Image (cartoon, rainbow, N blue to C red; front, side, top):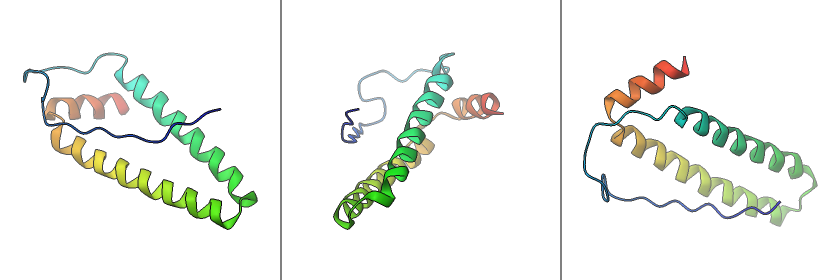
Length: 96
C-alpha cells in the first residue's frame, strides 16, 4: 500500500459558493464514517508496527502523528465554528 502525506487546504467561509441553506446529503454520514474507519485502520496498522521500529523511525512517526493531530484538532475547531446550527442538529440526530 502506498500512503500519501496529509495535506489540509483551508479556505475562507463560502469562498467559492454563495451562502445558501443546505441540508446534509443522505450519503454524507456514511462516507464520513467510512473515512473515519479507514483512518482508524491505518492508525491500528501503524501501532502494530511500532514495537519493531528503530528509535529514529519511532521519532519520525511520532512527529507525523503530532502534525496530523494538530491538523485534525484545527479542522475540528473550524468545523464547530463554521457548521450551520441546522447541520449540527442533523448530525447529532443521525448519530444517535
